[in-house]
Amino acid sequence: MSDVLELVEARLRTTLGEPDARAAVTFLGTDRIEVLRFVDSGVVRYATLGMSAQPMADPTAVLADPLRGPRAELVLSVRAGRADTDKALRALAVLAASPQVEGVVVAPGASLDVGEPLWPGAAFTSVLVASPGGLVEDLELDEPMEPVRFLPLLPMTPNEAAWKRVHGAEALEKRWLEHGTDLRDPLRAGVPLD
Image (cartoon, rainbow, N blue to C red):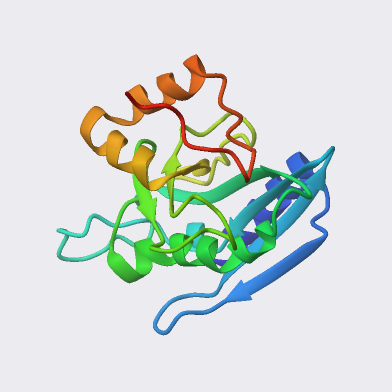
């Protein structure tokens, strides 16, 4: 499946430019996950590379289909220079490995929790998976493989994550929008939830 990853990396480079850094993490029993860093106009974007090598499988399926099933990579965008966000690389690799390690299917509207701050001093321990297609277009693959979707990650405070569990992802995104929340600000406070 290295050809899939070559196509994914080409799509990322075409859309985001040349990465200025990359890191790789391998977890026991999983494929290697890389995180590429792109810097453009004061915004740092971190994109995973490796999650889409295998389709995500329904954890209740007896056998995983080697070709069919959703494929995705994760993209996190933050304002540059406000926090040490490069420390998020390991957390992103952990999230990208979760389909292989935990058998989860990562999809828009899902919450992913790393159990610790995404980077030193961050108020965020989890992310909301947003809808794809805005920043990086889906990458079509040959049939019967499904396209690779590039899923934006929106950092959430623990209170926002708890509120989202009760009210849903759409309600949280609406709340952020109503308050003009800068979701790329690595130092932002949680949105008012009362």
